[in-house]
Image 1 (cartoon, helix red, strand yellow):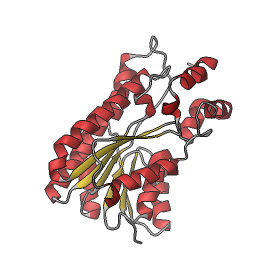
Image 2 (image 1 turned 30 degrees about the horizontal axis):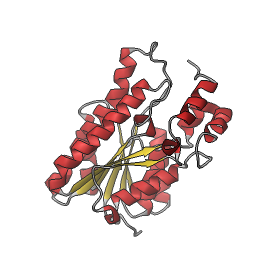
Image 3 (image 1 turned 30 degrees about the vertical axis):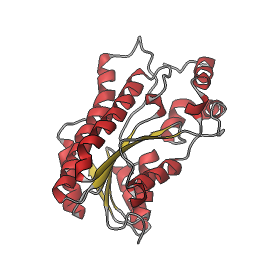
Image 4 (image 1 turned 180 degrees about the vertical axis):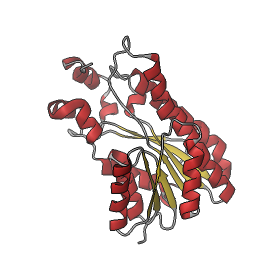
Length: 267
């Protein structure tokens, strides 16, 4: 198997479903060895099997990214399994609609632990391995248009994703001297299992009417951008957050207001 990422090792957190799974498959199709991460053994095995059936190489490392020590475990596994960490994608996350006045501090902290601290500790461990190897590397953080715009019920999620973008910018400054590029991807609504569970078919159709492109993104469309950012073609791009949202943010917040106020999310 050959491609843009031939011979490199990509570690992708939260890669057992949705965007993460799409990235795992696309990176493998471009020749990368992929470390599949998640918390569900069955899902992880299914993703790894899909990669191997297509001629790729995959390993599995399970664990909670919110546990401070897990980043080192994950990075060590990648080096032991494939010899290096060349590409790291901090994709693991969670989302739910929670009214501001009803959200518990514990839940708010959990969002920060998973999205921000988890991205920090895992990408930090990966960066250390890249520095030790001396071959540069690429780190991608998964942000969201929810971190750029205010949306009802997403106080914790939006705060976390905004912090991820700040982490991306600072990381890019400190790691540039080592030849490590750090960027973030900010998707808009993406058609996946999580979105379907949150909204349901009718609400998804309504949401599509607020997007200039008229539809949700497919996970593969986000994965294509990730492949580009990890490839030599993006060698001079670092410290950036690239938006993939079908024009939603360009349309402004009005469409989000119309969508949200039409029927408040269920508690």
